[in-house]
View (cartoon, one colour):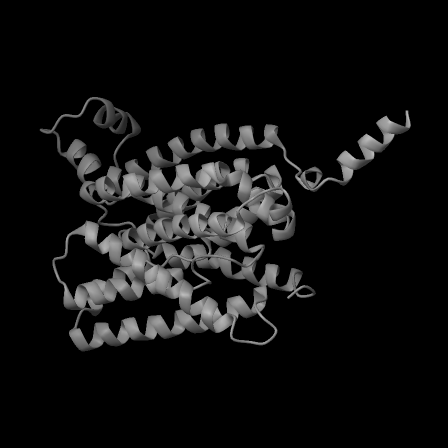
Length: 351
């Protein structure tokens, strides 16, 4: 009897006992989210400068006729745009979730920690010095720029004697983002490419092409698969590095792989949609609240919810002031800034 009670007590005190999950909630989010995403994509495809009935959308997707103008509009303009928005939303959300899990920093986000600004700086260099560069190389430069942003943020943040804290990391991210954004604007003015960069500065999925999706999809798919493979290790890291090491995790390797995944996701997303922040901040927090702290559920649920946020934000951006489009980045920031302030206030005792 005592052995059983002591065994039960030890199980309750084990580190893995801290992992609270709600598989039923995650299953509901995945199922309902995918259905809602399909509905949102259909509505987004049908709405535009020329409204198209949902029945025509269905026919264009499953029985394409190149001789019909509405079918051409759907296939050549709207469908790649919506698929790109869904993919980008998943990228930002999963990148934010992995960053928050690895660093145990509730304020971690690709926009707040300099990744987006770094990728944007790399894009400015591409447009200025290598005009007409194939999209594949633009993505590669975005990866390098995002990596530069991360290195600068962690370098400045760790320069203090007291080391890195969530607040210091965010402050370093804000400073580095401002510096890289200023450099990007300087390059744009000097080389007269401001109009080319304006789209990426504001953020939007207009003009997304099938050729871009064909290049980015393998990168995104590979990064998401690797993210799922290391999801259990990220869960243990989120409980504490000492706990992860005690359970046999190679934390250095996991952090390196996780960082590469984040760079791929953030760099790819910025190369398509531009500097859209706060998606990776909002979605992971909301997902953890709903499904628990197991990243085997957080990552796929974040991907679905991030796609939902970007698809419906794009739809709202076209409905606010037609026929003009409101930048997606501005709409997401309307939600993200108050949410960031709420988190900063909530975490003030530990920052």
